[in-house]
Length: 418
Image (cartoon, rainbow, N blue to C red; front, side, top):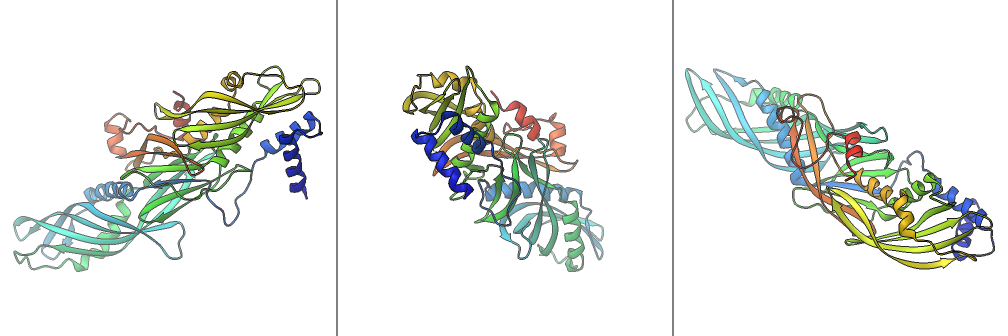
């Protein structure tokens, strides 16, 4: 029943029926300030970050190669074998009975230094391995955000093929199990990025694999948000994030009402949002509460662009719409410049992008660079590439990385405005 009453009041507010302007405004304000709390057992994602399979492969390859450098040689009868390898292929898989796990099948290729019976020889080798990653989240620098990590928990199959054409006369089978255990233990934790924050508070987050990619699905505190129809497709070797228009609109509407009066007892309320390619259309209602009050609707159209890797919504033109009795003409572009409406959309988008999160010494950091923004299928889609750095590389380079990311969710929030 309460939903029916709210729906009727909302309808009246847009059609200018007899209800008083102040009463309609208070109804709209209460609606706009609502926040969703808790997360249902089953939910549809309002934002999805897709990490491409080549990108995940690059992250895991860095981790495995870092671990291989620190592993002691394989001790076999009468010989020591020291592998040096790279990850040449990787495929992600689901892990039955473990929703917070991601499985993988991979292949290592490289050379192994064999020391046996007074001589040293380097031989090519391949190793097929199967294992699983455990996904975990922790609070990001921004208290409302979450940082996502993956740790290699076990290698449950390892087939090591060493070219023994010279007839070395030993077998590795007895040592592979313990070597695989050591490899899993020494592989550093993987940082998959920080998501959400004060501008995009999250109720829940989950990670799963799909068609070779890794999906980070977000549920925000938007009380009137909307689900995505499909996850975004990232560029080759990169990443992409999509946020539903309904969710961005809900955050912008809340920011407008939380800001309060803009000037001369005028309040602003975003009423619709449409993103199409490189353009946007924003429905805006201006409320004047002095005296009997009035409201007036406008449609703002403009361009989506990237400025210093930050999304910018640039208004270009205004179209007048419906109005209540006695409504005066106001310049909505001037009021937009004084409000937080467009910035709320820009900031929410910024906090859906994966950026580096500091990890412990020996860990890896993913740094994302935004290269494109566009409206696709009722969603804002941002995409770009990324680089992977180990903590040792980061220290050696003075804490900077290629790719243009920042070092954490908190720093991102301070630096995102151009």
